[in-house]
Amino acid sequence: MDALLKLFAALTVVWAGWMYFLNSDSETELRKIRNELKVAKGELGEAQANYDAEVKKRDTLAAEVKNLREQNQQLEKDIKTKKQEKRERAEQERRDRMAAEAKAREESRKAREEQLAKMRQEKEEKLKREEEEQRKQEEEWKKQEEEETAKYESARSERQAAAEVNDLQHEINSSNEIMRRYLTCRAYGSGNEDYGQIDSLKRRWTQTVQTCIKVANEGNEKRLRSSSKMLKDTADALNRISAGGNTECLNDATRVIEEAQRIVEAKKRLKKLNAGKR
Image 1 (spheres, helix red, strand yellow):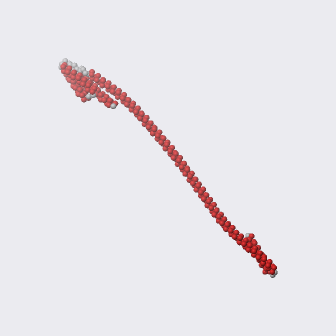
Image 2: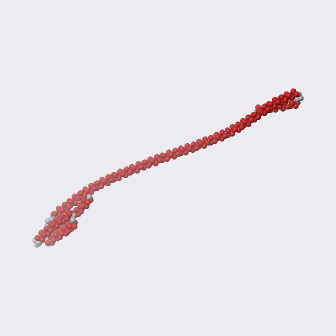
Image 3: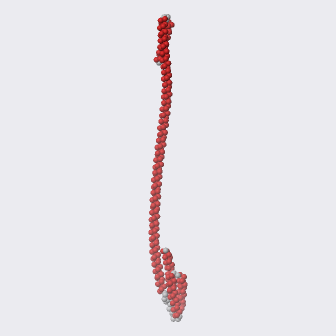
């Protein structure tokens, strides 16, 4: 701005000097004017140089301003980019944090579910073990009860068997005693019989009863049948020879045969009981 003012002042001086020269005839004035013109030209050159310097300075400043403006724009752009990147980074960090929190919650939920599942499984396994132990205990109790019942039944069966053996043995002894009572035949003659024949039949009676006793105690049912038939035949003969006077022999023979058969049946039962003990 100062350079422009100086240039304007120099031009004014030059113009004034020139006008004065045109209106002056004096040599002295001319020289004076020339000197002033020279000074004015010098000032004009200096003003022009200053102006050019100012223009150059202005252009330099304008370039610097432009450069600074461009740098400022780039800086604003960079700041804007940085802010955007910061926002995006913050948003990504927020998303990552939320994702991490969600993952942590999911893992925590899964851990709780796994813990609950483990607790349920342990509870179920414990319940199964308790049920199995209870089942085994019940089986053991049942086994013990069955063993005790079996022992009781066995003891009861043994007692019953022993009692039955005693009863059977008593029955055998009783039947033997009864049969021995009939070893002597009660037949007698009425006066017209052949006493020798009666005595012979009575001896055969005694022998046959002895045989019945023997085979009955041996349990020989086949020989008992033949001996029983012989005893009946002997009783019939004694009764016929006395003309019906010895009917007691028929009754006695029937009693002997019944007692002998009772002994055979008792022997069969004793054999089964002894076989059961084995």
